[in-house]
Image (cartoon, rainbow over all chains, first blue to last red):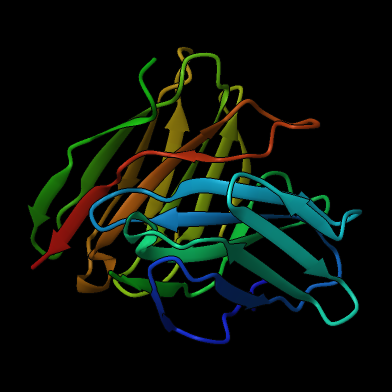
Length: 113
Length: 115
């Protein structure tokens, strides 16, 4: 669970395109995942979550996919906007560890107008 | 409604000093967690408190301590500060254990610089 990592540290996309941010985790006992967005000077902001008994969850313009077979998590942002520019973190909670979350290093998303 | 509030927002200390950071959770939230975020990295878990009891502790030295008060606010104390303690300290609150209670709502953090 401590080895929550991201494949790409930076990502640049054109405004209006779709963005995909990936995250790998190593602990098969992880039962809950959250994607957070962090803008400069602010604390992490909740985007979307998913439990381990689900494969997919959709929100407004965002979709999270969970592949437990390969321990992979992704965040898809549709029609990316300049306001989406931020650092995105995936966080995992390991079963029976209370409410402790392990965060990845983060991916910096830059939206080009 | 006010979100999670933290104070101070910024502070500068010298090596060997101690620091106290404060956090007020969202009204109705009974659990408070503390995270350390070093520049360029993701937040790292330090402590979780629920109903004034420590419910979890991360891999941090005993120089780090915390407590939660009857009104669910919390303090994080760090003694004998080291240069490596320079970081953004984030407080997060949640309802508490149980279904649907796991989402952490973060404050803006306290930026600590140790010189």
